[in-house]
Length: 237
Length: 273
Image 1 (tube, each protein chain N blue to C red):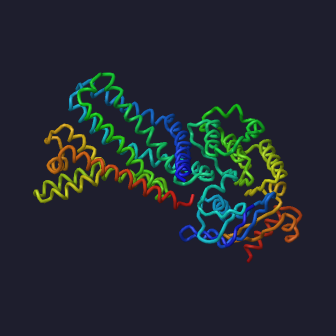
Image 2 (image 1 turned 90 degrees about the vertical axis):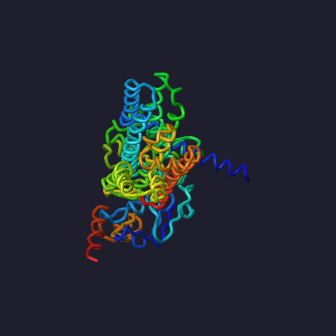
Image 3 (image 1 turned 45 degrees about the vertical axis):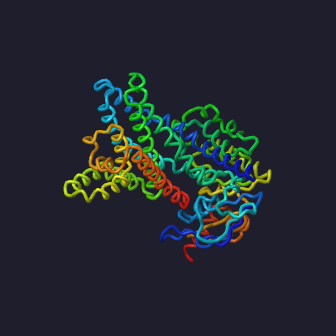
């Protein structure tokens, strides 16, 4: 569960987040959408502590994000672009991440088999294709039975089969009570996965609510059209 | 209470090693590091073959090492950090303190760089069996070069973290190297030619402000050949005995390692990734 209130962040002259209040409810999948440069990645990075906000408060499972790292024990993160140390193998990479979490009893690498990357895991990461690296990136996010999983454009670069497997996994894990935050440009994907939606526009919340609500609000039957309608309205405003 | 804090300290150390170990593995397997090792093997082997184990060999070797180590460390260090940027983001999302991550990344680079340098120089000496000729001078050279590796990796990290753009960062790194390795000597020559003996304190201060020069002086103090001392070396020799000189140099080098590293850490800690 993530609670964000009054979050502000500027980079130099550019005000990226202009006061964000938002919630990602436990056990649900929250999609974050918005035009390019709306602040999606900055918002995610603030939750992870990669970016330090100028003002406002973020709570993850009740713990205030303030520079202490222990809350990240329960978070799995899949960044948008995977770039790993080129001379390590996939196995060595996963072993490294495992070593960083000594308190996790069993690493969950079911996705290695599900995404059929086992034969690639012994190869140097620089020799792997972009898609395979993205699969390893996904495996790493699910490795430690996290209660909160943050995925930044998770299916970008994945073939349809792998992308379906990953989506199935997301839905299964939500069934187990895990919380997800997903950014995506693919609206049909969010329509399939997300329960709630946060629409960001120029650093502000343009809409926050359930998928059902956004469709009702915009009088559109599918999510893509509904978000397009929201974008039009926010431009007009 | 002590037991708990000792435990936390051990955990922190374990965390640093958990970051450093895979980084070392990654660097050791890179083509660059193999070339670096091969360079020192070939240079040392060549000098030993042509000159034998006399002091001249060590002085020539010292000149090569003092030229190459800061340059390679600065370039490799900045490129390494820029290339690790996305991976650092992934690691920062793990339950890891920023200080632990920073120290792990630093050691992950310093250890393999220093090891290949020490190994590359030592192996030919052992092979030729001339270690007993000037053991203290060789140890001084290797320690000094390792200290330069530590200092310039810190400078490289500091530069790479303060300049967002990698070309700018690389340029600043090269400018620092040019200043310390080449421009400095020219300025010193000019100052000495124009000055009288009252300038000596200033010269002494100047030598402390250049880690490369410090190692050069430390090496020359081992040989006690004033003619080869260089400008600042001669002054240094007049001010200090070999022992005090050694301590002053060691302390100045320690500051050269600590200060850029602290600067890099502050930048790393404040940085938005």
